[in-house]
Amino acid sequence: MKILIVDDQDIIRRSVTVNLEFLFPDAEFVECRSGLESLEKVGNFKPDIIFMDISMPGMSGMQATREILSEYPGQRIIAFSMNDNIEMVHIMLKAGASGYLLKTDTMDDFQKAVDEVSKGKTFISKNVVSENTDEN
Image 1 (cartoon, helix red, strand yellow):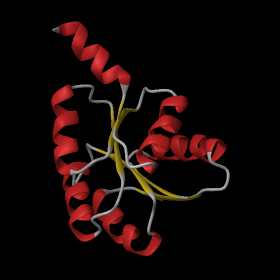
Image 2 (cartoon, helix red, strand yellow):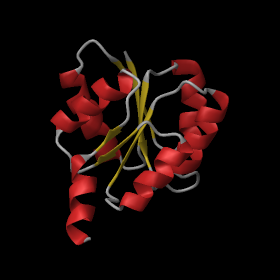
Image 3 (cartoon, rainbow, N blue to C red):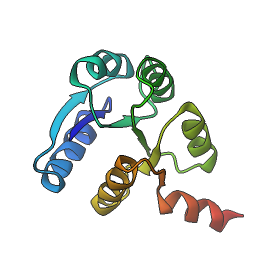
């Protein structure tokens, strides 16, 4: 399995990679700092899963998701963000993401997301649903 991690914050990107390396020791990992850089890496690396931050300077994760899927239609992208707004989940799914995680989710959630999205299913953090459900 090949996994691409896209986040402009070094500490987040590195932490996600290190934790996923523990969960998926046979996987290959590549990191990117921007949406624009991710467009370049996808063609060369051909990842099975992309973890895409939503808010990045320059090209947003939403725009990068659309452009990647336009050029590589079968790509599986899991959006991950601090934004727990259900509307953002809908926006990212409409852009073509296969999943949505919060950066505060557990590594078990990240593992479940990879497992589900790898099977062609959609994964949405239970914390997005529950936090927004509690407010309604």
